[in-house]
Image 1: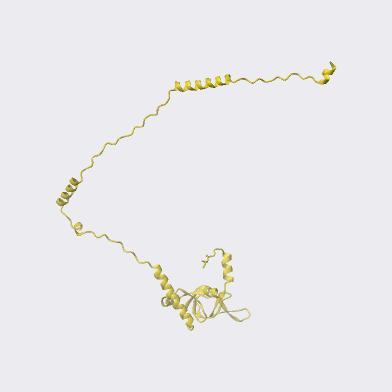
Image 2: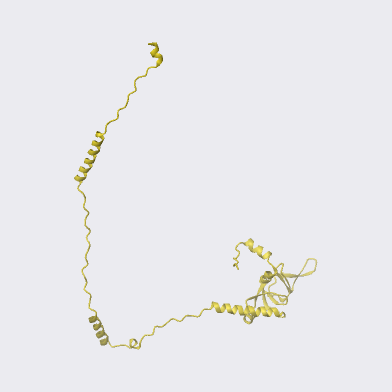
Length: 230
């Protein structure tokens, strides 16, 4: 199965929220649990259902507590008992609240399926915590023999040191031979000049030995008309 990548563009994020199916919308309607419910059930949040008692933490209706009467999956809103307002014509309507502004103080466990969901999620979370917690590795302590731990008198230590020095004779240091770079021999300048002159004279002789090509001089051509006149 191919892993889904997290969406980064806001337009795509809004599109997934608006076009989400019902089972995804139900997960998005999750609210935080109170401290007591966290310790008892071992969960931080849970999708809200009708019948749960809720305490509003933010917004204009902060501090209101009551049961959830209905859940609107289309608009991602919940309706709390006792949370109403009056219209201009005098009629009262219930105010919608987003579940992110709410804390669940009591869960309705009338449904047996919800109990099974709570148990399975609790076990799954405990398994994840066990995997993340790695056992601490103890540092290995090198065990030294008792003879080393016991302090020896200075006289014994000095005698042992002298014996060790006598057993290992000092190695004779050989004199290091330094390599001297020999200067490169250069050809004398006079010989180089003589060679160059000899090469020049040889090329001149070769040029003289070659026969020169004669060029034909074209005679003056007389036209036929002039010949007839003569």
